[in-house]
Image (cartoon, rainbow, N blue to C red):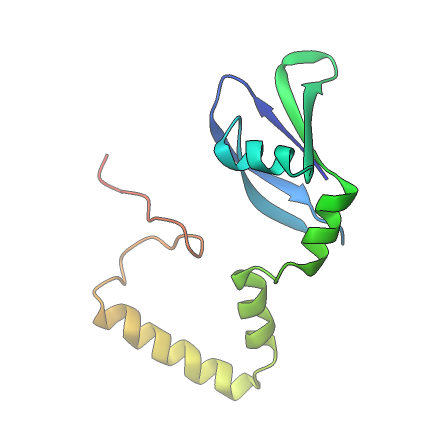
Length: 124
């Protein structure tokens, strides 16, 4: 896996392909404490991008891939797997209950966000 980041921005979201070829969203933070620690632990290497010295690339090392292989699945993938294991009638009941919950919370008119991401303000 290789990520690239422009030195002019401190963070951005991007799609990358994981080891199985699935597209995943990641937050890339340039020169962050997290990246420095990953580099120090030799889990990723950081270098200038070929042809563009303003960009840096992070590449997962073999040691980093071994750590990733042992890492738990992200919560979203576990949730999707759990939902896929439910019979259709249970999924329909869950959808009805979640709809009641959202309405009960007064959030029915709110935009949906990615799991574990802060809501974007619609009041600009």
